[in-house]
Length: 189
Image 1: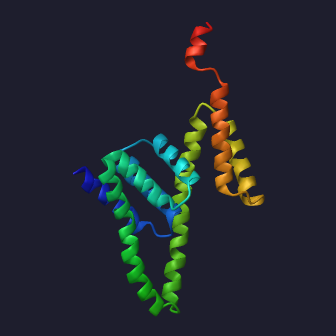
Image 2 (image 1 turned 135 degrees about the horizontal axis):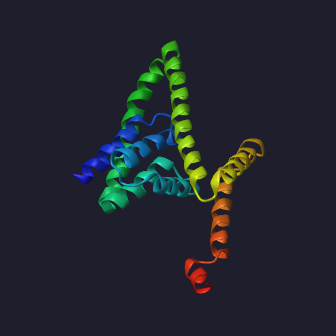
Image 3 (image 1 turned 90 degrees about the vertical axis):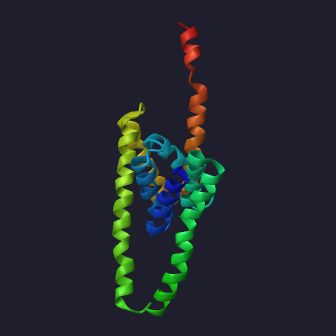
């Protein structure tokens, strides 16, 4: 039954994730965290951060890891196939139809109507991550500094997101190594 759930969860993501990987992230969150409760939002955001730091499409990276974590090797293959098969089928069917009617106004309207929906889905997920970050032990001050700094680096200085993620990961590792562990704190008392 678990393999069927894995397939259905990622098939829905694959079939409804119109607009590429970023638009499928809220759908994966809905399936994995809210519907099946295979992990909590903290674990999901960790997987998302790591997935964004690695090369390749985010939807397949997340499907592969989550499928493996929930159902082993077979779960990984199952989730990957469920994610890419709808895309393959839809690419063949839709591109054939859209190519035949590409100059029709309803085709352009359909494509333009999806963009705001994807933007709202991403905004809702972003707001959830901002709330989680603000409630962490780093607090709201650090959250707003990180938001403003990220906006400045990504939008105005055109720093590649992978560079920013890598620098933040290294900074977190260095901070973790520099802070005393719980056993060192207990021994010092």
